[in-house]
Image 1 (spheres, rainbow, N blue to C red):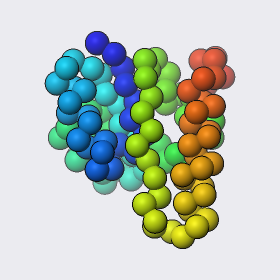
Image 2: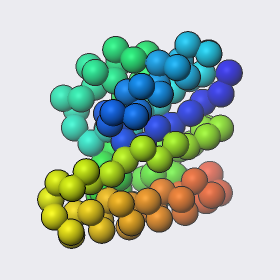
Image 3: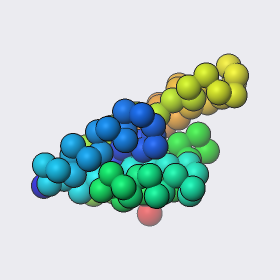
Length: 109
């Protein structure tokens, strides 16, 4: 059993992936930006965790990844919010997430 964190846990791909991972016995944590999305995520068998990748620092992301065996990027602005939001999520947050995933766990403290 692995602990897998899915970033963008309420997206179309994540909502399809989570139940597959849960079915094979993995512990799945899905990062969501809106608490109202928690019920949909719970229905997949994953545990929702409210963390906005758009706003979270590298340290906050590292804390969310603590104990994870794998991190899956499934987030994206989806064309909502214009070029600025696309840059903030699809590039800047993705880079912060990659840096957080490779950061030593004590940085999350």
